[in-house]
Amino acid sequence: MKRFEGYGVLITAAGQGIGAAAARRLAEEGARVLVTDLDGERARKTAGEIPGALGLACDVGDRAAVEAAVAYAVGEFGSLDVVVNNAYSCTLDAPRFEDEDEETWNRDLDVTLTGAYRVCRAAMTHLAAAPGGRGAIVNVGSINAEQDFGNHSYSAAKAGLASLTRTLAGHAAPRGVRVNIVEPGTIHTPAWAGREDQLAELAGAYPLGRVGEPEDIAAAIAFLASRDASWITGTTLRVDGGMLAVNSPFRQSTP
Image 1 (tube, rainbow, N blue to C red):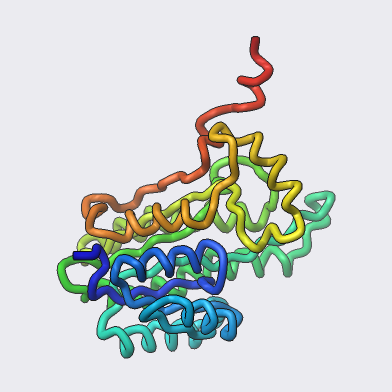
Image 2 (cartoon, rainbow, N blue to C red; image 1 turned 60 degrees about the vertical axis):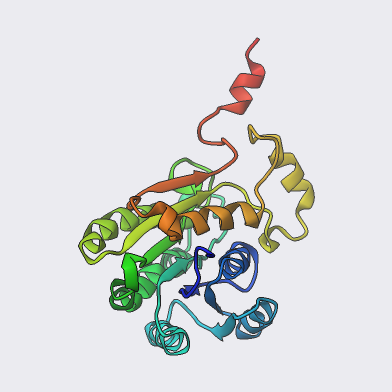
């Protein structure tokens, strides 16, 4: 039997990149998946390429839209068993910190951190009712939460998401809902379109010699969402090619 047979799954920002890869992976393992995205047309296009998937426009910055997406998933699938919070906003830093725009800061935190809060809040009752204690939340974080890689507002939001993962795990555990976070390194997604040369240079900074692919993260999401991880909650799973574990430039410069 496939790991997600009979599951209803909602994934945010799943029109492309990591979210789309996660939707495909979970659907391949039996799940019915609601592909949501700020761009509704993109969500529906991606869903149309995945057997049994549905597509829906959803702005995680809009509480009513989030609640409507959760209700739609429950209505279509009969249950909501897994939520994957993948939506984010990442804005380049100003040259000097004191020139950072407060509107930009607020937008990055609202989408990346508060957006996940809105989805978890709307979904929690349904996840707690999932049969067999299979309710699970998988947040998609970033190694930016752990170390300085730039992007002040995005990094702060991802660090907040890691903290929310731990506190929510403790709150949700008595209700049978597990909450974990995956922290990717650099991933080859459409966000890097036109910067392939830069990606190739970054590959050398990773101990495993390459940047990640969306499927690398989808595999980690599938594990944490599945019953294979039934005794795992509040955990951070870094999927970063060894970036945080190994100081590659130092090792390369050491005789």
